[in-house]
Length: 446
Image (cartoon, one colour):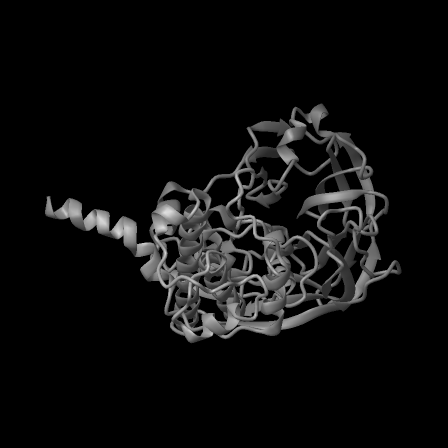
């Protein structure tokens, strides 16, 4: 009986107790946003969606777009969206969650005791303070009660995300291996030799990628904006362009031959396999995947990845099949690559690793170390120990931020394709101002 009484007390009174006493620092932009936005939290035909970035004020929406976030969720906030959201943005989100849930009380005329909230909502023309108490269950529409609960979950997740980010910073300084970055390529946006284009037909607007490095250190970068592949030498000097006109989705180098998946133009529905001679930069094979027994659906969505390991070509999430190539040095087996169960188990249970890291597998070096991540790369030993943690720069990044912008060599060096520019929102429209295109090499200190 005692437990039941306590439980009822928590359900009925706890939401209002938790809502107040939150001293916040607000801006005039916050005031303007809450003054002008329509309140629809209690309408029957409205389903409030706090996951949509369109629900947030312009300054926050811009930061969320920079971090490549299309929807706000508790999962993404708990690890700062894989480290892509900085502490300042997380704190702004928390402030916004606090204002949103207190707005529900303000709309019902609650007289705030907290000085900051009282002053903030006092600037709203619609705010009529007249109630010292509000009965949560009776006076609030069920949608409003649900919104308060959702916002509390998001706020708590954001607070956990800030703690996670602080812990990751401390962890970085205690790991055994250190990497040193060096800019290898610094190219321009444009249509000339060695220059990169923006794929304006893509949504979101896409920059260059993927990137691959051969055993001699030559760097190859796909340029969907100009429908080309650029080759640079190990020092970053431009060498040549491969035959233009192909939209390359992913590729790998094996014995001076490039194996590429793509299509002849952006309107094609069928994927093709292309083989290029890396020395001459010439196409030597052009055939539909279906002719090789590979389903076109194998390369739709985010699973467009191929790689070469031990005389095999590996495709992510693709069933086994064979490729025989006339005139090549040796036939290559096309097969599905999966991580060992042992390493997957350790990564999923790793207390210092972000949730879902096992889904961001990058590569495995010749020693047997595994690499995971996008904005932050974790190097994991065969025994599941964290060897290194490398944070990639993200400021003004243009394009989809995916694993194909990173390449791991057999020696464990990391190449990162970093196209930059400025993203602005003007009249609810996105505007891109190109910056530069860099390739940064992280080399292990030996």
